[in-house]
Structures are given as C-alpha cells and as structure tokens.
Amino acid sequence: MKEKTLWGALSILRVMWCLAPQKGYLHPDEFFQSPEVIAGDILDLEINRPWEFLSASPCRTVLIPLLTSGTAFWIINILHRFQSEIALNSSYVLLVLPRLIITILSFLLDYTVYRVATAWGSNPWKALVLLAMSPVTLVFYTRTISNAVEGLLFALLLLLTKPDEGNLVSNSYKGKRHHFIGLVLTFGFFNRPTFLCFAFVPLIYWAAQSGSQKSYFSHASIILTVMKILPSAILFSVIFVVADTIYYTGHWPLSMNNMEGFIKLLTNNMILTPINFLHYNMNPENLAKHGVHPRITHMAVNGFMLFGLFHLSAVCSAINMIRNVMWSKYNSDKSPDDKPLPHQTRLLLMFYFAPLIFLSFFNHQEPRFLIPLIIPLVLLVSNYNRTVKTKCVIFLFNITGALFFGSLHQAGLIPSLFHIQQIVQSKSASGNMSCHHTVLFTHTYMPPLYLLNLKKGQTSVDIIDLAGCTQEVMCQKLTDLQVELSRRNAQALGKTMHHLIAVFPGTITPGIESCSLAYTAQTMFTPHLSMEDPPKMSHLLTGNLQSHLSLHLIKVHVGTTRG
Image 1 (cartoon, rainbow, N blue to C red):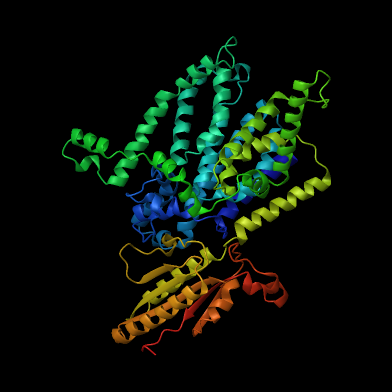
Image 2 (image 1 turned 90 degrees about the horizontal axis):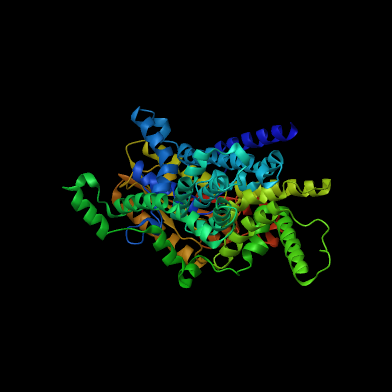
C-alpha cells in the first residue's frame, strides 16, 4: 500500500510539474524537432525552421511531430475558431500543451512496467516507484523530444515481446502480435533510426521464443518469425514515405489532375528521411559539428548522469555475470558465485547493455540518447536490497537530477521569451506609434520563436542568435545595431520606434559592460545555469552568485540620431 501511494503521489507530481511549467531547457531538439516546426505549419506562427526539416535536406519524418505537438496545436486551433483568444495568445499554452501530450503518453512506461515486471522476476510496485521517482521520467519524459518518443516505442516493444505467461495470452493476440511489432518498429525507425539498437535484442528474443521447442533459438526459426513482421512494417513504411514526400515536396493528391500523375510524381520525388538521417550521421565531419566524444562516454559518464547508482548496479551485475561465464568456461570447479544470476536478470542486462554498446560506436554521445533504457534498468534493480544509506543517496541523486535538468539548466531562456512576448504585445497595443523590437540572444541555447506567438510575415520583431560568439563579435554586433536602429528612428519621424534588447547569461556580464553601451530596465531570470559558460570560483567568492546564476535582459538605449 505504501508503494502504491508513493507511485500515485509521484505520478501527480509528474503532471503538476509539467503544468507548472518546468523552466529548464534540456536541448534545442526538444523544440526544434517538433513544436517549433509544427507551430509554423498549423498555427501559422513565425518560426526558425531547422535544417533537418528543410526540403533541401529532409532528415526527420513529419508524421510523428504531427501526432504529438500537432495534436496540441490542432486543439489550440479549434479553440481559436470558437473565439477563445486566450488559448492562442498565451506563450504558456504554446509551451505546456505539447508537453502535456507527451506527459500523458509517458504513463505508457508505467503500464509496461506493471504488465511485464512479474514475467521478468521483478516486483511491479517497487519497479514503478523507481521509475516514477527518476529524473529521467520526471523531466525527459515530459518534454517534446524525439528520444522520449523513442523510449515510449521501446516500452511498447518490451510489452509486445514479453515472455508468455501460460494461458493468460490468447491465441488471437499471439496471431496478431507480429503486426503490432511491425508497426512499432516502423514508427521507431522513422522517429530515430537508432531505435533499431534498442529493438535488436528484444526482437531476437521474441523471435526465438515464438519458435517451436525443437527449433528454439535456431537461425531458421528466428528468420521465419522475423519475416512475419515484414508485411506490416512495409505497409506502415509506405505510409511514412508518402506523408514525408507530400510534406517536403508540397504536392498534395487533391492538387493533381489524376491519381496516376500523383503516383508518378511521388515515385520520382520519394523522400526517405531515415536514409537521409543515416547518410548524414555516418559522415564523421557532420558529427563533429555537433560534438565529438570518447566512445566510452555513454558507459562511463552518461549512464551515471542519468541513472546514478542504478547504472552502477547494472555494471556490477554485468561484471559478475561475465566473471561467472568465464569461470565456468575455463574451470571445472564450482562457480565462484554461489548464486548465479537468474535467466531473467541475464536477459535484462542484455536489454540494457546491448543498446548502450551499439550507441557507443558513434562518437557523438549525449545523455538523452540513453533515456529509453530506463525500463529494463528499473526492472533489473527493483529487487536489489538496499541499506538506508543507499536509499538516501538515491533520493538525493533523484532530487538533484530533477532540479538540475528541470529547473536550473538554461532555465532563464523560456521565462525571458514569455517576458519578451508581453513587452511586444504591450507596445503594440498602446498608442498610435508602431514599435519594432530587435532582440539579440548570445551565449544561450537557440530561442524557440513560436513561443513569441508572432504571425508569419510580421515585421515588428527581429530575432538574432549569436550563440557562443566571442566578446569582440558580440560588442561589434551590439554597437552596429545601436547605430543602425538610431538611424532608423531618426528617419521614421516619430512613426516607428525601434528598440534593442539583449539577452545573455550573467557570467558574461563583464563582457557586456566592456561594450560601453548605455542600457536601462535590466531584468534577471533566476535561476539560469549555462554549462557552456558556468560560474567560476571567483564568482562564488565575490558574493554576487545570484547575478551569475541568472539570465539577464537589458534594453539598450537607442537614440534618434547617429550620435
């Protein structure tokens, strides 16, 4: 009863923290691979379309973002048609509603754990509590990031491939299961081709156990069983290819004179986004643009960063299993371990480490790539005995991880966009003089423009992202903008007032001050931690820690003359 109550409380926390909302910014992909793109398509908002979604280099399927963020924005569109202006004019709604869709879907993880735990020799409610209290679940699985979708599809695959429990599984379900597996594999591959790394071991295990007893784990049995999923996989692949080709080429069936012409056009301009994705990522020069890491990063760093002691427990269990195998192979004596690992534990270790090892062959390694592994991990460690001290360490790790990713990392950027939207709306709604705002971001993650709720083609706001530029480039750009906007104010003769806003982390404040710019109305958004520009020890000693752990917004003085 205590574990059920704790899981219920943590589930409520997951939803409430999503609605709060969480201010942390995990990675640009949580916006630029889903809501930023779809908001422009459905709500006709001003966006910054990433290169993966350009027709010249289509590397991402549009179907899954349409089903997730698209559902949220269609709801907003419907409300807008019923004159619910507040639904559309709120940056909060634009941010939270797509996240809420993912958060609701995240309970598929809980359902999977509950259904498969017993079959894998795990305690269902202990595993559910471990899942619900993990920062991976509380933060990553409440965000519109493709890795979260990948994790949900991996959960579905584990549910579909779980060991049969006697007569509890009907023959009709067994007969149809391969169709569902084909569907999940197709969705996973088009969402992220790396899904095959996660699916490989569960798929082989399912194929092996589906064969007859005589051919159990035989190559022929596995091949024949896997062949059963091909019809459904091909069917759904065609749906994805058609959808992506229509989206990226802009040729709709209704706009063609006849279906034959449409099919011919579709065949000649076929878009295969997963193939383009793999072609891009197989080029080391392309991966180098996104960061190159040692191949041991997932095992030695990212696993601990996401899962803490759970990852350490899995590593120790794997070492123990390898030691037992090696000992039994080269020694006729009794195994050094009096209690060899159960069959279910060995399989769960394979479910966890096989994808991790596959992903380690790529030298671009980010923590978010591993979040689908949360389910085999909690199933694996749920029955481990823990001391009170260990439980305290796990609790502190989860609290720290959730606060870091959910409330601290780049956490000032989203509130600053909310604030800028209010500034723009208040200026446009007051007086007869029109206002134009130039907003410069520097040393922050990419700002998702759809949160400003600006219609396409608007001319009232310009966004400039300098990323991690040098101080000289930053000062030169700010000075040039100040001079240019002052000139425009002088030419506008009071009809249009140009404003310049700069947004930057507090750790580079000395660099901004060295630009010798006059500015007013400084606003700080606390907390904000940029790991690219973290506070130094000298910042801690000055006693001005709040300023260095904040994102600063200043209104640079723009005159009406060149001087």
